[in-house]
Length: 430
Image 1 (cartoon, rainbow, N blue to C red):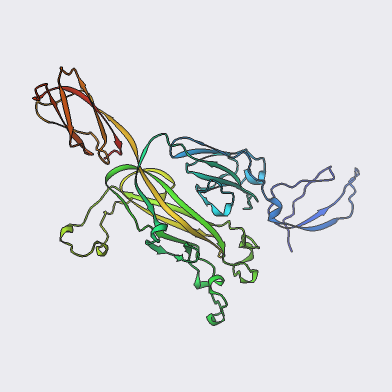
Image 2 (cartoon, rainbow, N blue to C red):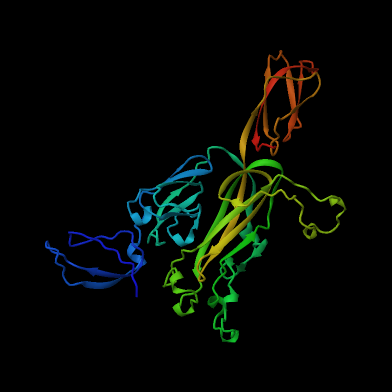
């Protein structure tokens, strides 16, 4: 056996070796007196377990809203060199305000450097859970948690509340199955790795021996089509439950060095994420009126080829007409799986106020057109300027794009008058 020997000299009877990787070490100690005479060699072999370098639990976790969609997550800085040099901070989220179980959360942003103690995160109601991951991939035993109910300083209009779980997961599955017993979407079992000797009849349990696929996705059945281009707030609803399909050591066919946990309890290497893509196109097929078949039998509407790239959907403000969604599951361990039990998106338009300059009505009905239409008819307030005694007006035909206004004198004759208006509604059409 050959070794990459390193020599360390010390005058102390003890020596700390920081940042060493797990593995088997051969240690030789020689004492040297003041005349340079060496003692006999004392040697020992020592295996350094990954668990010997388990990082401490993060302390001081807290989140502060930056705006309606993002928050600043902070925590106490660590001096653990196994974390600050080559380590990471893993940031998960659970929609449950009382969540404390790491396994029921999902990663919400890419991992940040272990030398950091701040991160900008999507602002979502629920619990944020944080763990250190050392330079060798060993994670904190317990998670730091902080919870928040985000403020809502501006009113919004919910235009669609997509709930794929309550609808029965009617979208397209790739690498996933609906598990009726568990009540949600799970990664498919990987039958290609079953019966390596070709003897399928000898398999005792198909559900566990093959392990799970490394990834899969579910395309939402529901699209959001606003009918025109708007800025839309999207807030995800994603809840998962972990489970381990292999609890007996002799059932796990993966290399032992890749196992995440011996006792089959800790689920650390499975994750789920929600994604969205948008388009400003909205081409409806021609001759729709001539299609006499039930609408459920129509082919999908063609929304053009101008889809954006898929992006993570957490708490986003995006511009588009049509919004499409998917959830993706991954697992780095053949025995670790997730059940997606809640899946959806809440789509909201922000409130806005439109103020006019001074306008002059005509001697008949005046038609006002908003510079940018609203999503639906707003509330309109008219402020007349210098009315004569007995003057009055009628406001009619208020719509998302404008309204009609007529001023009358005391004899009910249409007249010209100066005025301003204020319209309060939701959404800005582009």
